[in-house]
Length: 263
Image (tube, rainbow, N blue to C red; front, side):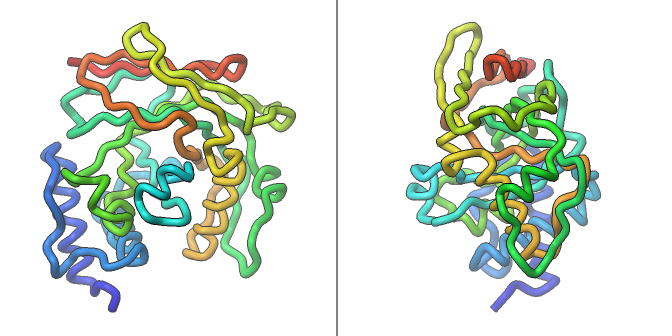
């Protein structure tokens, strides 16, 4: 049975309290704990209503096969990008504003026009045609749960897909000729390269992840809006950093993204 309105509000209030206190909780109480991803998304929707933050777009999580296997799922999940937590590069965030600071290097897209809900699925070509620009990006992953990798996907969806923030680099309007599956990106921490990866890690191609989201939101009767930014999942894993860290994501001729956490 789906959670009722009172349980959704209780769960959302607890997650908002953890967010505002910069704390992590062990679990939601049994009476308001999501039993499935539908409950999780319903809680996330209520969190958004209660926070009343403007939304800049969406994040997609779990777009790598190894991540899906680790979490025991066979598809990604989504969360909203709240406008107050989104910055353009170079960006500075307070290191103490996050209970955890997971860094993911990602391809992001900004939409030129709406992709509204409809009865039939969107194709990759249809979704790509609605995109204006491609951007390099860094997602800051931050969960309100202590054991977030063991808590289960329903709780991760309730926790807004564990998004903590997002930084985007310059946009490329002529991106359609790029081979995104083969496009390489690197991550440098405090001047030392610590990881590299390619777009193929993201469901074979970041456009596949973008199309998944368009259809996922269509089923949920939400849809994508013109000017929405969508970040499509890490192409080189997740890396945890401390306050004071300085990060650079380098996408070659696509551009770079700079992020610094204050101490």
